[in-house]
Length: 571
Image (tube, rainbow, N blue to C red):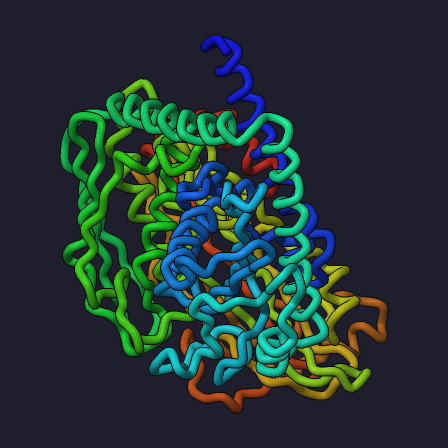
């Protein structure tokens, strides 16, 4: 076979693998039932070669690509010479790779003619893992309070579900009717992918498949080194702050030299006694997520892409906690702050280069979690959260930020529809909309935040486990741009909302009677209640602006006022 034919065949194989991963993710999405999977698309799907090198890096939420790689290595190490056809391994241990314990991963080996040829794996968020409180455990003081932990365990054997292990999981979660189907959807997705890879290897041959994997990784590493080489060699520093039970400091120093990057996170505060800590895999996954989206968005990302990038993360810090420190909040708290460190360092390194247009101000990052749990009118347990990520995107060097954009690295996720929430749970939404004047001003303004209000409906009360991050710090502006507004959660108790419903009105939060309180960021106890007539109002974080506000184009500023994004008083 000549080199040209081999190259064409390799390209066909690689593109087919990417399509297989996409199709498998669709199987997971369409077979699951939880809104976070079906509508929000909080999932990842990877394909690796027999040696565990990632060939297809999550075609869904990018940061799952790195955590799946970690968890695959944990499976390979634990089962070693006992990896069999028809196996699938369940993992949610943060120190083995999970973003946090609520992200369950399922890894499966692919065999052809008795030989291990590849691996497939997926991860998705589960609403509960049996912690001391539903979902995340914001009051946990160690990880034993954060729910069941699976260090790699065989869930599927001989292509059949092990009912003892499956039952162990389902018996320990609060939403088994949803979560049992979500986990079976994960199994189905792996079966769909591995059968197609078997067909692919059968069509092109094992040798061609292996050559394609090796070539793809080598090409991606070369492309990554070339892109890094376009940055100015130097040292770039970022310092971030985080607020929860107290204020914390996180730090990163990026060194760019000779086509390589090194991140040193020395200077980050020691690990906390609360659930905000992050294990190393989650930290690196969030850095990789930003690198994939900001520096390598036009490249095929796989193991080779990250070969020129190294990390130094001192043990026992917020970004490198050790068991038994709690870390169920890692994914959306310190994990998101790791993204901001990466975004800031890389944006500094992009300045003055041909890729400066990819430099950005800080995106909204404050996690706003309003979690209500109880018994619905049909006598079934429910766990309902809210729209935690109605944040504005950071302004870019040449464009405004994206309005209501989620966080910086969640490229494919969506917001669950109000209709879906109201159909599944005993609640009514009064509003969901953008927040005027929430974006940081600048030559290019940040993205606007979103806000929403809701009330219980059909039941008298529920448990309220609200917590949030980002009340005291907003998304920072860059290069003279202004900060976006911070997050905020308020509650009006005993309102007249149902009286107004009876008169045919759906009121705004400000129009309601009732006692208003700014909710604390950290719950005080497990017994806080929300009652019929109480209305919660949640405001996301506006994106930071880029460049001096005085340099904003007059027509852009006028358009913001005309569209209602900026009020005349602030214009």
